[in-house]
Image (tube, rainbow, N blue to C red; front, side):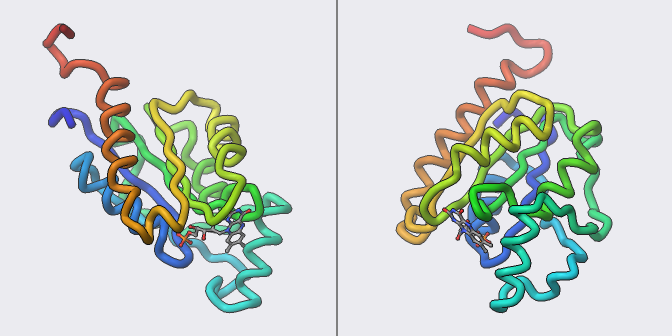
Length: 174
Ligand SMILES: Cc1cc2nc3c(=O)[nH]c(=O)nc-3n(C[C@H](O)[C@H](O)[C@H](O)COP(=O)(O)O)c2cc1C
């Protein structure tokens, strides 16, 4: 990964899968990392009521309030945004984040985690909501993360980002 490019990884994770992926992506890209923290009426999303509430937020495209973040996408050349799939949709905190920050984001990439299906739609939704073409995107299932196969996919994702960013300033390509 080119040293001059500033990269921010931003993600929401309810049960840790997206966080595991975000941490590896950030390490591989030498990026800063930020977890999105929301102030939803759902309260603790990890209990059964929180699950149902999160599902409703995703289905109804409700955008929970967010706590202020430490990093601003405007300070980065590339922002990589990660979300779990919630009812074939993106997670509500990531919807809030994208709506709030999409105009500050320069270049953009996406990753999502899922248990069974909906990942293709979510990557498309992310693209549409952001209004920008992603330099790279990645979907990884919970089974792949648990089985550690995701590391190969992350390598390919990072290589795709590297190619999309082109040669470092002042250098011509091959
Ligand atoms: C409310 C809710 C809805 C979900 N809907 C889907 C879905 O439509 N398709 C799917 O494959 N996984 C679905 N999942 C599973 C998560 O996408 C998957 O477990 C993901 O890796 C969780 O990421 P996290 O651990 O970072 O929260 C859903 C999970 C929740 C909590």
